[in-house]
Each structure stands twice: as C-alpha cells, then as structure tokens.
Amino acid sequence: MIESDIVECVITLVGNLFYGAGVSACILFLNNNKPAAHRGKICLIDGSTMYTPQRAKNIMTEFDVQKVYDLWLGYKDVIDKCAIADMDRLRENKFTLAVNSYIDKSPAPPIDPQKVCEDFMSALQRVKDCESRLMQLLQEGGYIDG
Image (cartoon, rainbow, N blue to C red; front, top):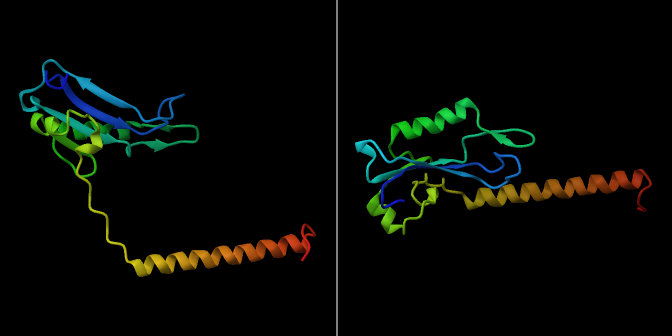
C-alpha cells in the first residue's frame, strides 16, 4: 500500500476513545487520486494529545478534530504533532507507519539535579510529616496503641 502510494495520511488517536477499546486507535486515509503535492509522501499526525478527557472515556470535540484536520490541511512538519514523510524516509524506516518514528520532538528542558534533589527531600519530609500525623490520629482514635 505504501509503495503503491495510496496511503495519504495516518493519524494516531488517544486510548480509551472508543467504548470497549482502551488501546489507542489509528486512522489510515487511503486515496487513489492524491493531489500532486501529496504524491510520494504520507502525512503522519500524532493526535494522541488532541482530545478532551471525560469520566468514562476520552472524546474528540469538534475543536479537537479541527486541530487534527488543520495539520492535515497544512501538510507540513510541525514539531511534536505532524511529519510529512517521503518514500525515501519511509523506506529508511522499513515502511513502518508508527507516527512517532517520524515526528520531531522538542528537546526536553534541562533539569537541574540540585532542584530535583531538593524537591525529592521536600516531598519525603511531607510524607514523613503526614505519616506522623496519621499515627497520632490513629492513637487518639484508639485504633492503635501508642
């Protein structure tokens, strides 16, 4: 299908979007008559962040769908969201259609090890304080012996 150039777009969706299917789904758009600008290429969109969470399942509102559609219409690389892969790139990746294999990601911000250590120690102290308070309440309530 890829080499015959009928795959126009692949969109990954968030998990728990459809009832009874907790895994993420994927939509493939096939087109025997691709526009000239799309020939020899596939638009790959990561729609896994474009959803609205609800209690029982996730949904895609019209706004969410429009964001995905705009990426398709724009037909250009967008960091963290969309990639346009030509046949050479697809061939290099052994024709996988795993969207995240193509999309460029923003670099992760640098993390200050000192800040991480301070945050951890602060959180650890809060846990110890809460544990002491819990023990005090259990003793006062007569649930445990002091």
